[in-house]
Length: 352
Ligand code: SF4
Image (cartoon, rainbow, N blue to C red):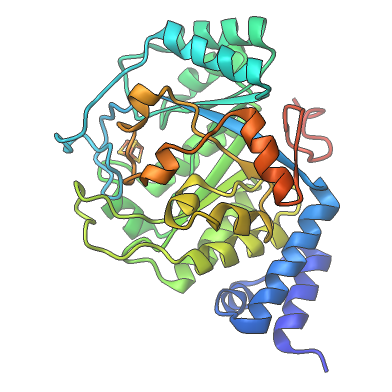
C-alpha cells in the first residue's frame, strides 16, 4: 500500500510542484519517511548533476556593514568585532591563488560597505575576468539597479541575495530599515540584468513557524533561483537574538531535500553554517540533494573577523585547499567538478 508521504514524494518527483500542506507534511516527516525523502532527493540530484560537486571559493573581503540585522554578528552595533577591509590587491591575489589551485568560481562577499565604490569593484571584476578565467559571484547586499548593472557589465556572472524569510513582519523586525518587498525588488533587478541568482533563507529563526518554512520553499520555487543557500540560524552573542536556540540540522536537511524535489536544476550548497553545527553536516546535506560546497578562502588573518555567526575552531582551521577537497569528497564517493558550474537550466543563456 502506498502511504500519504510516498504519494506526495511521487507527485513532487513527477511535477516538481507541491502545495503548502504537502510541503508541511514532508517537513514533519520522521523515521522511514524522512529517509525516503532524503533518498529520493539524492537520486534526483544524481540524475541531474551526477556525482560532481561544485566548489565555490568565498573571499570575505570586508566585515564592515551599515545594517543592523538582528541575526548577524557583523551588524554595525557590534562594537566588539575587529573590523577589517582587504585591499583590492589583496582580494585579487587571494582570487589568483584560488584559481591556481583549481577553483573555477570565486564569491566576493562583504557586509553592506559603501567604502568600496562601485567603479573600484567593477575594475577588480574586470581584471579578474581578463586574467584569471573565473566565474565571479558577488555577494555585497542590497544596492541600486545601476550598481548591479555596472558590476554585471564588468563581468560578474552571479549575485547572492537570500530572501532570508518569507514572513513580511518577521523580515522587517529582523532587518530594521529594510522590507521584504524591497528585497524582492532587488532580486527582480538582478533577474532583469541576466545574473544567475543565488537566493535562500535561514531555518530556525526565532519567530519562524513550519508554515513560514513551507512559504520559504514556495517563494524559492517562485523566484526560480539558480542557487539556493539554506542554512541553520546560529545565534551570535553580540546580537539581540543571543540566547535563542540554534536551527535544527535535521530540519535543514529536510528543507534541502524538499527544495531539491521542487527545483531539480537549482544548485544547492551544503552550507558552511551546517558544517559549523555538525562536522558531518555538510556531507549529510550532499546526500540529500545538495551539490555545491563553498569553502572559505579568506586569508587567515581576516577569517576570524567575519562572524555572521560564531565559527567553530574546527571550521576555521579546516584545510580548504582545492586538493584537500578533492581528497575529502572522493572519500564520500563524490568528485570535484572542474568547470565553472554555471546553471544547467536549458535556455538560460539563450535569453541573455
Ligand atoms: S546580514 Fe548582511 S546586511 Fe545584515 S548585518 Fe549582516 S552583513 Fe550586514
